[in-house]
Length: 625
Image (cartoon, rainbow, N blue to C red; front, top):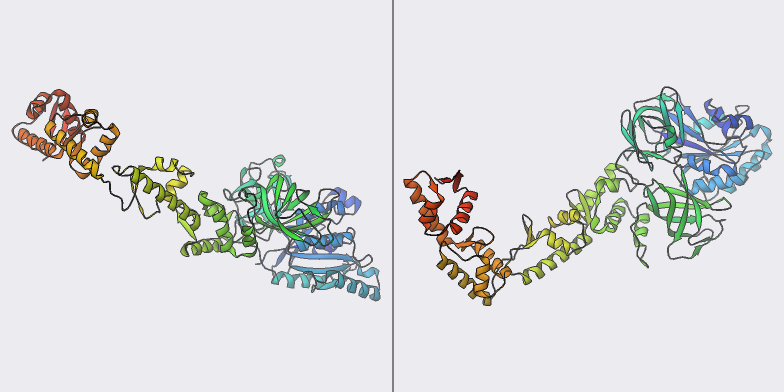
């Protein structure tokens, strides 16, 4: 069943609330002051039910010019506007302002009701109708059905219900497969239940016992109870008026403008890139002006930064950035309204393009904003990931950034990865251009390192990362998908690199092997080798490591190496000894090799660590079969 919200609009005292009551039997004026004064002060709500089960949520908004902020809090979730114009007064200032707001919010469907039709004659009604047609020409209401009605006599109320029904059946539904998001427009307490919030669900679904988060307050809770259309339900959907009984949340901690969302997806923001459209009768708007900013049910003061302009005039548009006094929860493709800081009047609005923009460099172009505004979902996502550079984006970050159904987002991401425009590694998305820059810098650093250190098998991950301006986690993530490098534990090298000695060093290599060979089981340690050959210990160590990798020598510990020939001889001597004995002492091992205890102990420790021998107290047993 389709879930649709119809919202009223129009000047004060044109009969909006009376018309809602005539349609539904429900008086949307709930406040004592409203009933006493006979005017709508705050948002009112009602439900229109049809015999076939179709239910329409109705939001009744105040018409007074001083209450536009309350009107805006209810306008964000409207699918169909019911523009109410009194027959005895015709088009008035708030009729015009409300229509401008509806146009800026991109409401696409509407109906016009001429109320108090019983107070005028047929000729006057015809004149008013013609006047209205001229007023809405060129707007989304240009072809709207106009229905003269009387809430007092019931004239054409049933006809209006059918017109509403037809409009509901043809309206595009909200995103039921998107992330759940409900801007709060009312907060109250019910005895025995606790805190209840209401609002129009803009996307997604919610069910009983589901965990939720209230932003920007960062309050976590659980759905204790759900109501829609005045009935308790187990599940509610986008496009419905919903009441949520929240578990363990104090009424005083919530307010209109907060948003109930699924946890761990949405991030409040104070900086927004957007497209701003000024109304045709708006005053000139200068760069860095203060404005009142409205989105969903939230209102805050913002400073507008115009891109590439010092000011814009009535009817003009440009890209801009809003810097907000208070954080809001919005997505790319949401709509917003701005009003003058003083005096308060609606001057424009537009589309939110990037709710989490990265810092824009001076004189940087705005091609990214053009693409977000004009591109498809794949283009938007590609821009988002590209702007993240090597921080990358998780899929959940994208889901909480753009207004769309989840299947559409996931399909777009899969397509971008398949086309090679995005790179996916360990759940993080990177743009191909950023990855190529990273890859080239890594390879350049490795080429330089190998050239400067031809004896080393590679560079440690941390040493390479320190040469590059990347976080440890992202570096470790990206390094794994460069196919031209090899990762060996914590060491990196180019795939086609092999450690090698320069011609001048080959003689040193030969000398090292000769010295170690002559030393037998009493080889000179690293520092002694360096002294004998008049080279640094670092160079000796690099050469010893290379010889060990080639299999010419065996590393006993950091300082002691023996030739492979002597290592093999040691194993043969051990086998002969254990063929005749079950165990061996240090002294027996020392005498067997013809060496001293100084050399015998490190050799035995190496054999123990290699599980060739097993130390049991002061003796060794042989582990090789």
